[in-house]
Image (cartoon, rainbow, N blue to C red; front, side, top):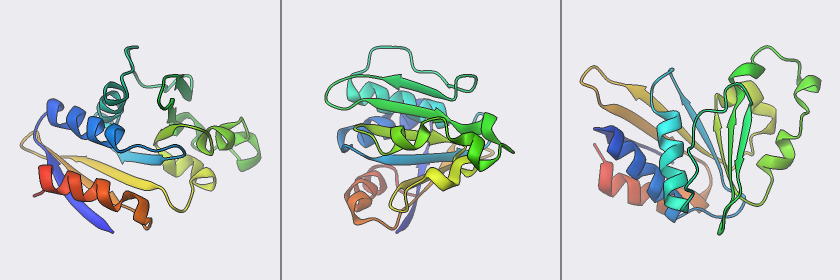
Length: 158
């Protein structure tokens, strides 16, 4: 399933994250792709708000991983940008255990750790448009995300 939605503002992007959080489940994996400044971390902040996380959520670029332990679900935020060009055997730093863990995992720059991404994840690709809007493409092969995509399409569809 592939659908396209539009975020017209930072607030929209945060709201999209909140909706993802409302429908989140244990073991959920969401990949976030897009140019620098496209809104990947903003969307993650929305997920955090939707989960009730009060800590400041920012990009884990220099850490690679930030964990926000919170009920009902922990949030694992991976930024794989620094792993570009790193050999597969050197990437074995525990990311696989986090991704297969007990929370929701959001992964920025997933192309650098493709070997750890489950086949049934949700892919979100964000692009800046000339008018300040963001076009967001949601894609998955897993029925467990179909309801979420339907809700987002109804609210933010083109």
